[in-house]
Length: 399
Image 1: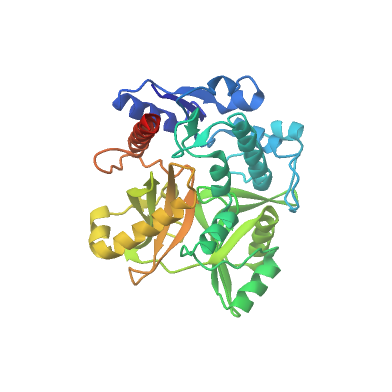
Image 2: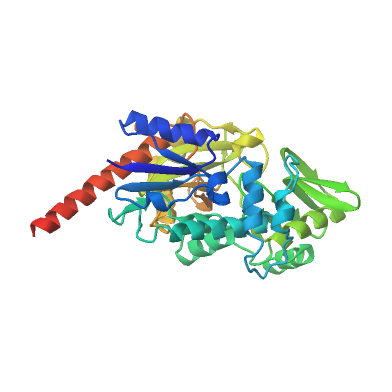
């Protein structure tokens, strides 16, 4: 019998979806390990280094205490960046300030450090798809860390001929951004925090010799002579240079991915993109995200588009080509079972590009593929892989 270990924030709804999937497939519930206990040392993972163990790291999202602990873990990680830093003691004393963007680079350094630390406890573990061994990860910690690094993902995609928006390279500050846009002949770009998620720290910026504007999820607040940045569900529109420069300078110090802002095809009167969940190498569940602004994330008040209308408009041949692109992007993380791929389709409804890949991009409540949700499909894939591995081992023994 497979033994599922879920590392998560227990209060997160993702936990319930996985447990429902296991119940649906007549499997025992996963043992849930609280990130808080794991980071603090109250809980360890060594005891789960046992045959037929399946390890799933889930998103540490929406828990400020966990965010603080991850930030604290990143303090002593060497890094050449110019990001803001805070000591572990000070990090743990931070007070909750809804939406505040706090130490995103140090958060990532801590997250990557913890993933590496936990991975070493399971050195014998094989990645998903490499066989049984002692067990395996659903998504490998190394892959999760890279998927949280937008510049690294873009570089990996470019190197492997996956279509992506043109990157402007490493941008140091506002003036450098303006210079590179002029040099490369680009008037519209997206500026994204290198390690942001859920549209955190995203700016749709346009500039030419006559004007500039920034449409963004970032709310700029001046307090006691200091600029504070907040994530907001309300989209802000800035046109004053000093405000835009202030925002860009703060974001670039934390590390950003800057790429050409490509035009989107329209559906139901809106620009849109498509979240495609790739499971076990196959593009499966999709959700069309209609954008009321350049950002299409559903939590910003955007709506799901009509999937049937989308499929009819894109056409079977084009859609098969786009699914293959998503599958090829996912295949660059061969040690992970699933991911969410954000697909942009240009106005010709044929040309397309991969915008991002998300290690935790499988949360699509109510979206089914072949009658099952993402979590059930993932568990089914593991059962199939396990059965295949057992058959292979049996054949080897017989020879």
